[in-house]
Length: 425
Image (cartoon, rainbow, N blue to C red; front, side, top):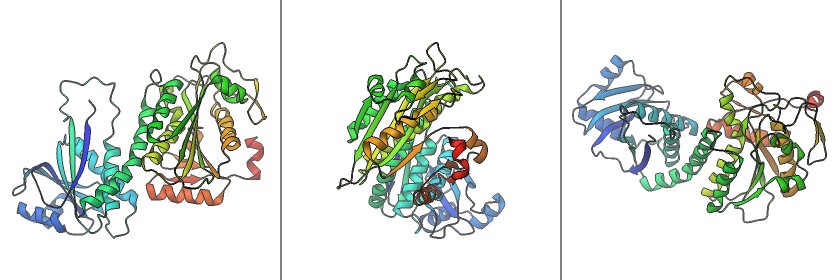
């Protein structure tokens, strides 16, 4: 069962709730409404924290059942870490994620969270709400509910804040990006028999309801454009290729757009150069780049972002069959470049070659950002904490790295230069 999440705000003050949550900064006493609530329990805070080994570090918790003087079944005191007035937004997002994990484990149904301290600005509260929503996400729509499952149908979380109206406005803006992330997750998680190229394209087309102009190109249009690299990947599958162009025009001027290009291989067997069977089921996620671009375009439209942006995704399925491309084939990309196929499992660069050419040729963007699950080797190099970044523009790379640090989506720039040109060729 997929539990629904209800997030709302209210001014400080306590109404009955199943769980009341207080935050304690590292090495500091409780303050504000949190101190008032704790005082009602009659417990010595210093003694309890010492006995529990609680210092206020992130992830720590004191869990008191049936607390005296508090209209709740349980009282949580969570470690907030350092609260020095200069906390990065990602730290508040992490707090929200940690909170969600603890509420899920407790089978919570109604929760009140005290956030009336000076550090809990509307922007900080919005980050916590986003982290909570992202961590609460589950993809269990295909699971049969077991009789022993006691998960409540709805989790209602009330954030007790000093200025509910300001917090609501900040949360609404932040949730646009969170919902875009959840759309990308949902697309990536769908099984490959449900989400093919046509189904993905149809999901992208739904963004037109938000004001995104969506254009779908099928095989005849792709062939007319000379996109033989992308067509070579798709020719082994019964599923037809699709190029989806999503345009968001939010700037008042006719400024050149920022372009985002996503690799959308809805399932990747490797083709004739077939992959090992172990873990091949994960190859339904080889369209993660296209999912991220689609989620991004939804976020821009929801926020009414004042920017011109183009999202282009190349949707194909890489399958082995009698019509599949072979090692040794030579194809001519839309740019006119000829490409020899040596390994049919190197299909992503073929799709992107044509998609990148298209967006540059047709839309003349001021910058292009390509998102792709292109090779597992980057995971070997960097692990799961950073994504690899290749860029030929120092200014853009610097801004992307800074954005990654601010949001917790960290990037690590990889080297490019003359020494690598022959290898790339």
